[in-house]
Image (cartoon, rainbow, N blue to C red; front, top):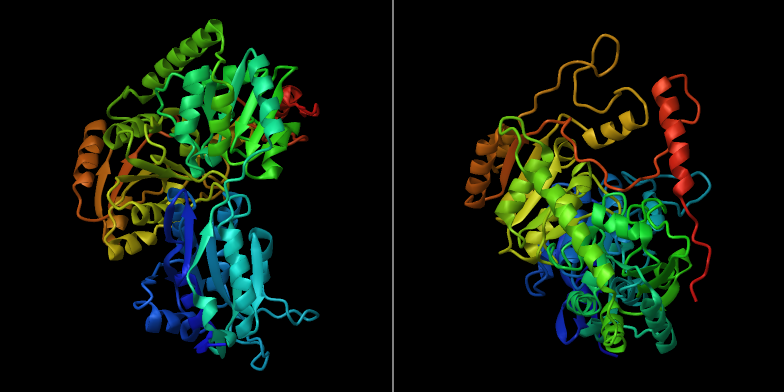
Length: 626
């Protein structure tokens, strides 16, 4: 057998450089590069391998400012690439590696492939405890990296150099599987990264991983068609799986032909243009009046490529028809079975194509169609009003979103993850392109936004990218502005200044509690944060890190800044002030967030009483759809 002598770190880089992915005839390298911060745990291993072989293998190295941030970059890149490409992320032992745990959870929850390479203790245990190693008095093989286990789809600790021969193929099987994918973690012992082994040359041969497109059982598809034909008020809830499978065209053809209404989730918004006749907007807690009224009365929910989490289902209060039934179309069997649905386990693109063929003679009623049209008109008027500037000298967040959307058009990408804007954007942002709306709302991770812009820009450099981030989230992870500067990437970051965590502040007050600990204020003598707002100059801060920057207090200042930012030669930061009390309300929706059951505060008591009335609308969908 022909072999080549390499260190484990060198062998790993050679292997990932030769892994390719193919779907529908499109073939490309799966790992586009390696993000890494080097320390004593990986400098002589993965770091040395990238320095010596990276150029020859066309495996570039990117240097971030924060380990969590680089995982967000990789996840956003994978999301924008429909999970057909990703990055590897390498970190040194201890705090560097543990900084990636949050990013691992985000990737796994959102079903996004990311390869994580944290460094670990010495496998030979000779220098124990090595610097930054965690010790356990009873478990000698315990490590801080064990924290990756519950947030990874696959985990292995590499304690021998030849171990990667069996571990790496399994890791890539998981990464490239549409139902299994998420964070894959290979914990690399520090000494083993530098140990040499005679690896078989066959191990480094080009391998093409073909993305599965499983076909659902014909009996189940036939039954799904029967249910659709019998339904008087059907509603499709389409999730991110529709976009990831590239099924947008098939969905549009099906609903245009049958007239069935389509509601969106955060992960699928933009899959149909906002003004498509059958697109009724986002459903559930963050939804439109159109989608939520249709959901309330629907006798059949066709859930396609969605996890049916608590927001789309309004904490299981959205679907109130006592006879409602569910069809679950999903490549993941677990998701297809949710709500005791008829489980149609299969690829969304292929399943929708088959449904269209079988339903070519089916059309919903004219009464149903008129209801959709009327509800859309009603909702469009509400959105138009929310986006219209009322006082040019005292802006609302909704108005800022509208102005950004006008400049971005339906093609520019908006990025957000946490705070009050993920509640406003699904209602107000008007997309005409499947990749124009990029919300991370599976984990809703503060700090995702700016690293995500880097990931999207790397995936599609020519597309305009607009980061919508609140001041609270901006303060958590802004250092990747420096990374954007060093990489020559030019997203536009809009820092919406509402003086703190106003999203959770609103929830706090809705639960009857007085203001406590959420706004960005000075501490007073009563030991509470009741003092004046702290003035932070976010434009000057962005400028200090190398960005172009503007501050806007008024409509005219903000519009001017947006136009200047679009012409910027580097990343741009716009600091815009909004009135924190000008909020966008809920529309025919609810979210289960319980107030304290016992309290001496009257406001909390009243909120609890209201909550106990609301939870009466929650349902457990126990009837099995057959």
